[in-house]
Length: 216
Length: 216
DNA sequence: ACATTTATCGAACGTTCGTGCTATTATTTA
DNA sequence: TAAATAATAGCACGAACGTTCGATAAATGT
Image (tube, rainbow over all chains, first blue to last red; front, side, top):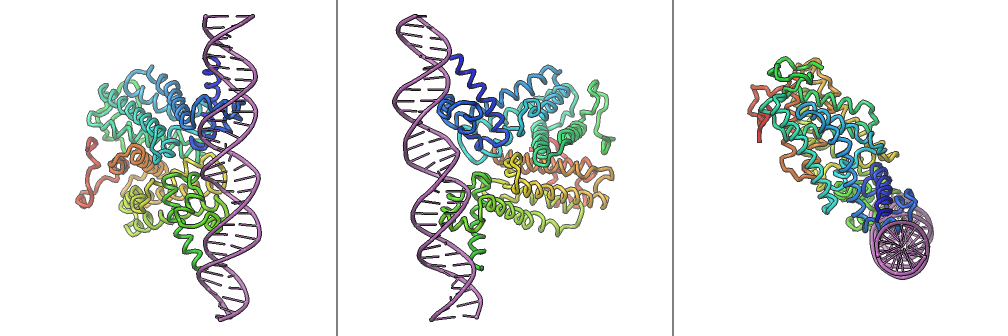
């Protein structure tokens, strides 16, 4: 039972790399077996079906999200600093994970949004959780007095999420090396609009969004 | 030469529908032939290769963008009203075109961002043009005094584009029927931030939900 | 109407896809 | 170390993939 899990992990590492470039559908058992140094049937036995492999890949991505995005961020104080940590880790996690082809989760979201089944469910649920985590972090910042009380946390989470999608596209399709910085600028603009000014120290002293039209 | 173009158009109509659900790679010649009532080889002769078919599909999407998004919007006065028209048409164009599976262009962007070749180039170029059109529209609004002079048009175009991506994901993966309204709220928030708030003179024109952060 | 171009079909090609089986090795347990 | 179990390889399968080619039907120009 030990050797199996070991090779399974090694397989998944390759699978993540391939899926990030070719997508979950383009991740084929033949090429994955070849790249892993296994026979097709030997590899197949680990996952039982292609769908099982796809689900395992998504689970692997969830693990990476946890390790690279959320766990480091949860060490920050709840509120704006934690929210900022999440967003910053999130924007650069594919680079940290050495995934050559960008975020598998969002690519899978666009790939499977019309293909009902367990993969779509897992992706959908994972991204829903991510959105909830973002919204929760926004609410913690509101409770800490770092964001306005009338902030719509779900709306703001949607907007932050959109920036991530935009950054991915600019970086990968346009090859823009400044895509993440551009997304961070937009993110800070969003925070500023809701009262989360740039000083991480104290945020309760500047009450309104009055003078903040075109700073930056 | 007449009959050929006619069936080619009919084929492309089916191809658009399939590609919007299955993606450009999932659009297969066999199923497209079956759905079009043609033989595989008969259909194949129209495009010469699968890549040719994919390029034709993208060109078809470009045409739809022109017909459903830009041409109607260009009849509005340059400035904010034209920008608003573009964004509103854009957000609902897949419904207007009766495409069952969402925007082909953005799906193709995520699908082909790591697959170099003519398809990627065409998608990339098309979305670049779209971004430029957005930025140009923003600049026209600036020149008309409807947006602040220090507005970064490219940055704002990026943010609007991101909202489109987010709305697509919410609508198609989460099945959220209010995704487009949510994106419109965020869009109006962006305009407000740059000085393009709802003009009180024509407040009855459209639902004035931009100012209220906690709507819905 | 006929000749010619154009459009479409049918069949087959080599590959690759995912997925079963049956051996045959490795590895773990007793 | 022997027995039991887990892990992998080999082989084959039906289906679908994109693609080619020669034959046939339909549309077009004269």
